[in-house]
Length: 491
Image (cartoon, rainbow, N blue to C red; front, side, top):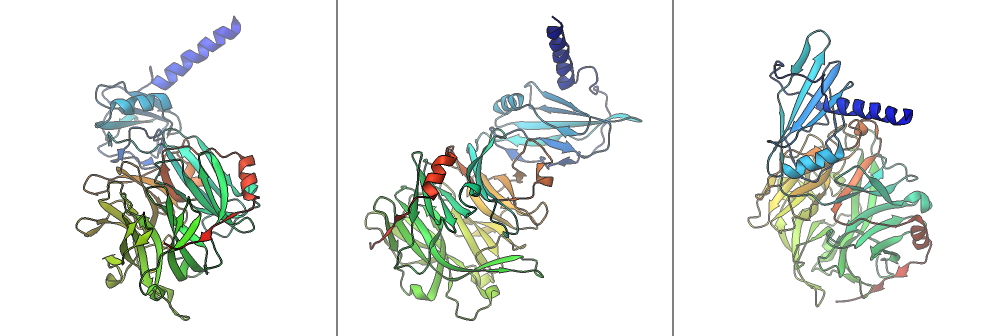
């Protein structure tokens, strides 16, 4: 009986606290005339209707805080806080967003000062899109300086809540480096990642099974990296690169990765064959970063003149090319230039095409092919009908890179260093039918101060619509097994 009474008292207190009854501000609270300072900045943005709660902290002086989140005549969410940290109830948030599709979402912030009482800030007004975002995010967590390999992991999380789980942690793979994960456009359960070191190989995950493959044949000078799945799921295009890294102590661009040579290869999954992509005069060029058109009939890639034994990495600039592809004969046409960045004294990397095939987003930097430390790096969008390029509004004064389209083409996920100039954080931006970007917002966390204290970078963030389930035993069996050796083939 006493225990039951305690529960009733606790429940009554909880209801009063979360609803703010009895101590919330009245209707006559004076307006300040300015927007409140909140962190992260979730103001003036367009959000998907299935995003996790946008928890934030109010950075205004006060002793009590009250927030009302509303949309039209739908039931509002009221939250009271003593420390300014606003954690939105998951269920109420999901219900409100479902009703607010295509409408405005308002966030009213009230702050109470012990001396002057309550004051009300201008409402934060956001839009809730009717277009959902893909269900899952996948990313690699790594120390920002790339100097440590002992605790790298590829992880996945839900977009609608804060649950997160490991895909693979290198602690069960003898601390080898795991990298370059890639999906089959998020349309199936095909997934791959690379591992370097003593357990090196390319690992393919399909239908719940994981297998280890060696995609470097005796005929190849270099291994296969930077994968992109053909939309059919039958092929994966790779570049085969000889890479050198430079670590700078007195340069704003701390890390530089340069090709000494690179070429493109095609992996036929069913036949387990590596096929060289033999372009005319291919020895004169370095070809890297393949990307497929949604119909699979075109392959885009980045091309720069082949460097000599002595070269200045600051003079290497890549242009965008494309080439036709016949999946039956596994043959390619002749390359044609699509976007000439070098004539603008610029370079491009990471071409990524929207699912409707209308736009290609790529990085745009001063030089080189690995721009994630280049402060000047922006994301630009190329209209594939007009071949006109423009800088996206989502850019900041710091590098943006590693971008990924949602499967419906309404959202762009990318990594940005805008918060501290050192670590990459995952951001999402709405993309309209004309290829224009909205204001980006950081992927929400349960603790709104999470990114202030988390020391690792989120690299290669990717959207997907399926959950990867790989238990440690299955991973250990795969990484310690002998790799399936790919064969050298011809078209």
